[in-house]
Image 1 (cartoon, rainbow, N blue to C red):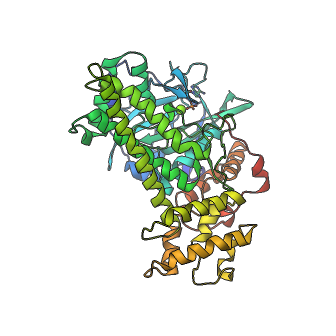
Image 2: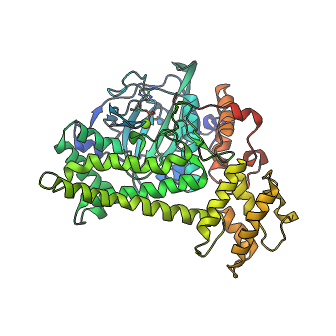
Image 3: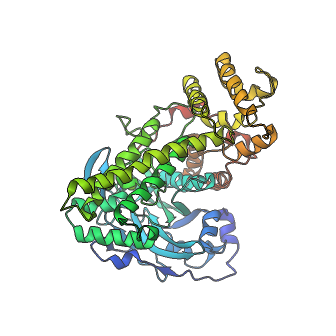
Length: 511
Ligand code: AMP
Ligand code: MG
């Protein structure tokens, strides 16, 4: 990312004109409302993601182009952008919530990127017909969290919507629990379609529109399902598989989404809508990262189950599209149910294989499942730091008798050393069963899947507090560090335990 100081310094050398299309727009007015952004007054750059810039195939200094700041703060769209807000509905905290929609997101169009079309959205660019009681704005605090975490997830290799840039305003104040300043994040993804888009037309009794949306999704995002004997179950199985893969990766890295409502579930299995998310510090499977989630519906250990619950809601929405929905409803329901079975199987496989990789196990033995379960149980019992434990385990030497000097860094994370030693003895035996594997190779391999740095709340909080005081350098620095999370950071504190003050941090739905 480039700093704001450099922003004013150099004028852009190369003029470039991105070409925008908007296939979603062709669906027609039942699906969205066209409207212009409400401009963010006196906008200024806070951050630009270079990895996302590369994804788009744009020149690294695109943001220095005349009109770039205006386009991404809602003052004046670029030629070809066709701003619109889409309508969707959804289940929130397990209850049907009725019509929701892009209350503060504005769809700009699609960029023809080297890897295929990528949609762009402004988030926080003013009210839309779907804002309900909201002001259409996003506060600087939550925008920094979304900007950083989108790019952090991409750095980790976890499917996610991306964040291209972040623009702030010192002038626009918005009221939340206190008065805060507003910001606009530009998001990028192959598609922003959610389960809730399909639920909307199913629940509002609009089968023609439901069919139209399904055909659009099939054509633009799931063409391989079009030739299946039943494209509806093929699409459902595809989404189930991608969702399973995604949530397995969340669990493996210790990520909690915080608000897994069906309107926050991507049809492409992407992490979407960063709100009160969190990364596990001390491992606690029951941890609830969202202070507003009083029942713990979206607690860490419940995410896999919730994923399936949400897929059931999607299946229900797709039901009217089943060829036999009217003639043989039972058979249609059964076929959808069967497609959902993909989820359990894929999730189990994906999680096991991710955890095997985290423990450096190359081959597959029956004993791996219990070994991994007992490792997680040990971490939970001691609330051991999840990220540090895996990173330090990467250097575990099975040929050193435990307790041994070489294994002290990971061992010292456990108050009950004998409990660690008992597990470590089993782990050492397991590692020795993969003869070709040397400790050196394994350490390199394990560190490539066990990140040194994740976006812990306290890291985000420090960047937020500095930004609120007018210094954006920490946002930019963190974004760069998080883009390479498997590298040892040059600032050791980035990879260290959270400080004591972080225990009192609370994140809620307020954003
Ligand atoms: P979320 O909990 O962020 O997923 O939002 C749920 C719904 O509320 C979505 O339809 C959002 O667009 C909408 N929403 C959230 N915050 C605002 C806001 N400040 N202004 C308008 N709509 C909002
Ligand atoms: Mg949302």
